[in-house]
Amino acid sequence: MAAERVRETDALGKRLCGLKLMLRGPVFFAGRSGFSAQLQTRTHLSAIMEDLELVPFGGYISDDSDFHGTAKNRKKLESHSKRSTSKQLVQTWNETQASHPVASPVVSGKIVPDVLYNRLEGVQGARQLNETVDEFLMRLPPKTTTTGPWIWITCPVVKNKESKSRHAPESEESPEEMTDRASALLSQFSGEKERIINANPTSAQSSITRKLGPLREQLKEDILDLAVSCGVTSGKWMLFPKPDDVNRVWRLVAEAVVDGRLGDTAKVAPADSPNPFTGEQKQSSHLICVYTKDFSDLDDVRRVLAEMVELGLAPRNAADGAIYYKADVYTYLNIDSSNSYGLKASLYSSKDLAGLSKTTHTKPSALGGLTKRKQQTLTTMLGDGKKRRR
Image (tube, rainbow, N blue to C red):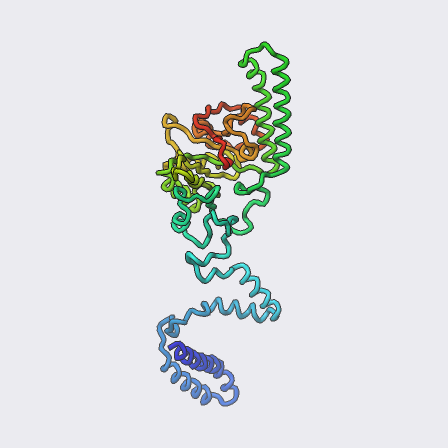
């Protein structure tokens, strides 16, 4: 069928070409043979026109009539072609192709578009680009999966769009420069704390606490500023679903991460290995971390919290409790709720942010003001001595 259409089109092209020449014919023939030549040309032309199927102002009827564009477009392109050299035409074609890349021929659960990137590709405990979220959840359900220590999911991103300076939260190694400098700050605070206690042997504990207050706030500010300067800006909202509910909660988180509604990364603690003698599991909850890229970006931290509220993952009203946000820098420094420095293990609570302006966007230079805000006292233990670091 296609070959027949090509033959018909070729024949039509030849006849139209002849018609074009004959339209120019009368002037040429009139110069040589006068009226008889003109009459002969018009007679031949009439015979051709009778064979062609024409409509008023429409031209020849064909499915391919507009394949090469309108007459105006063709004239413009032909004019451009005549003015350009072959080298220029080739260059123009290459530039046009480069600006309109060809899409991947197949998009399915097994063939991944080239533009997507997953920094956890190849990691057994993470969702891969060639599996759907359902397949990932079936492969690694947190309630029964015992391999770990974490199950990860990330939002696929466009290649080369990811920040190069950011320390990835899934990294197994702490950022050495940051931890060394932060450890020095902690040691300095511990020394000053000891000096104050020794200088006030008869003072009550409440008095010592008041004296340490400004130093503790300065320590917090210095650590957060250091984290920002070293690119260790990740932080996470933490959830603690019970084992019977962890699969449902993790599904909500995983789907929202892939859809771009939450942060770019999330993880869940798998099931603890059962007691080798009794086979029992005494795990009371699974930790789920929903990450944001920058703990100092309150707009984004609040945005993720708002999405979690809409998904039913966080309390809508302060009376119903709170969830807490912890900066990764505290995780790397092993700062939990029982740390000896008196630092709060969480940076924010959902109650804290409910009272802040939605347009607040705190940059590193303004962290000092933020850290002086009153924070809620933790009502859950953020560090339980497990092998996993939060």
